[in-house]
Image (tube, each protein chain N blue to C red):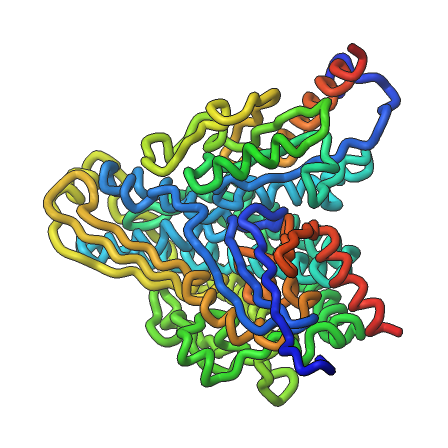
Length: 409
Length: 144
C-alpha cells in the first residue's frame, strides 16, 4: 500500500457440499482483507425435476411429491398445492378442517423456528443452546407425531380437507405439550435476548434496510425484521385465519425500534413461536364439530379432479415466508403444469446487501439468520496470488467462535 | 447393540455427513439423533466437517447430476478403512423421484454402500442402528 499499490481482493468459493443442514448452494465471496466486498450465489444444485415429475402423476400422488420438496416445510408445500387445486376444482373445505389446518401449520412453524434458533446458536459457537433448543423441539415433534403419526413428513394433507381428526380424548396430551413449549419459551427468550454473547454477535450484524427488503422482495420473518409489514395470514387470509386477530410480528414490539439486523430476526422468530402456540390453543377452543374432508372417497375425488380445467394459485405463510404455488389443469389425469416458488428463493437476493462489509467470521451467522439453505461450509478454497489453499468448515467455524471469544473479553 | 461389536469400542466414530440433494428431512433427523433425546454423541459418534477426518460417510439424497462428481470426491478423500451409510429412501431407491431426469442415483450407482437405512425420513433410532452396523463393519475390516 505504501508503494502506491492498490489493494488486491481475493475470492473464497464456498460449497456446494458443506455440512450445514440445508441443500447445497455455492457462494463466491470477494474478500478484501477480512471484509466482504462482493458475493456471487449459484443455485440449482438440488434440482430434482419435481415439477416435471408432477405432470406424470395424479393430484393425490403430487401431494407426496410436494411434501418432499423440503423436509422442514413438509406441510406448506402440499398445502399450497392443495389450495391451488381447490381453487381450480371449486372444492369447499369443511369448517373443522380449516381449523385443523391452522393447527398443523402453526405446529410446523414452532418446529422450524426452534430448529433455526439452535442452528443460529451453533453458528456463533454456542453449542449448549443448540442442544437446549433441540430438546425443546423434541416436545413439538412429539406433538406432531401424536397428531399426524410422523415426525417430519406429516402426510396429513388431503385435497378437500385433512386426513386425521383431533378427538376430545387427545386434548389433555396436546395441552400438556403446549404448556411445556410455553414454559420453555421464557427460557429461550432469556437466553437469546438477554445473553451478552448473542447481543454482541447479532446486534448491528448483517443489516438489511427496509428499502432493500422491499426492493429485493424479501419475505417472511426476514422482511418483518426489517420493518416490512408483510404476512399472508393477515394480508390475504386463507383457512380460517380471517377469524383470528393476528398481529404483524416486528421487532419494535420488544425493543421499540427496527434495525433489521440479526438480533431483530431472532426477536421476530421468538415472537412468532409464542404467537403460534397461542393460535393453536385458540383454534382448538374454537374448532366446530363436523366433517374433516369434503370427499372421503378417493376414487370419486380423483374422478372429479380428472375433469377440471383452469389455473389456480395457492399462497401460504410458511415458516420462512410466503410460499407460492401455481397449477394448471387441462382435463387430464395429472396437472398440465405446476410451478413452485419457495420463500428461500426470494430471500437469497437480500443476502448480497447483508454480506457487504461484513467479516468472514460473520458469514455463518448472517447466512443462517435468514433461515436459509446455507450456514457453515465444508471447504473453502482461497485463491491468493494464483496459489490455492483450503480452509475447512471447521476452520471457518473456528474463526466464528474465536470472534465470539474476543468480543467477550 | 449389534452382533459382532466388541464391548469396548476401539475408537470414537467420526461421521462425515454429505448431502447429495436431499430434502433436509433426513438431515434434521441425523442432527436429532445427536441431540439430547437420543444423544448418540455420548458413544463418541460425532459429525465432522471434513471427509479427511471421517470413518463413515453418511450420505443423504438421491444424487443430482450436478453433485455426482463432488460426492465421489468426498468419498475418495476419506482414509481407509471406511464405510458408507446411505440414509433415506431416495438415496436407496429413488423413492418419489425415481423417474426424474436429473438424478444419477440411487447411490449404489455411484458409491459402494455398506449400510442402507430405510425410511422417509428414517427415525433417529433407525439411523443410530445403521451407524452401529457400520461400526461393526469397520471393526471387522480393521481386524483383517
